[in-house]
Image 1 (cartoon, rainbow, N blue to C red):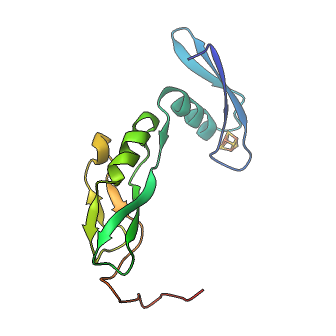
Image 2: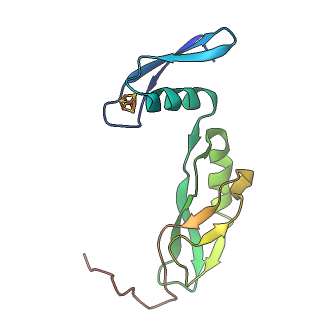
Length: 131
Ligand code: SF4
């Protein structure tokens, strides 16, 4: 890391600009309005993480793909490999929203879960609204 970084806090809409500096062998943040910003800036500097969202193939479903996400933010450096792994996953309908698709996805420690329910082919969910 450079000696000084500027991080825009995304924890709330105020978007504080936070400085993170190397100091005495550690890192110090300044310019935040609250402790959530300090925590975010240090995490983003030292171990940036993101929730991965995407879709996987579905066999026998009303739709051909199922939206999924990781159960927790995973290391940012792992995102490209994890996104590629989604191409190799195929599940079978029916599936429930929140159903675990893969444990310890990409070795991240986080699970991969369905973000919607999906019935077997041809059926529509009771709460399905035509738009
Ligand atoms: S530092 Fe606090 S007040 Fe500022 S954007 Fe982050 S969460 Fe919001």
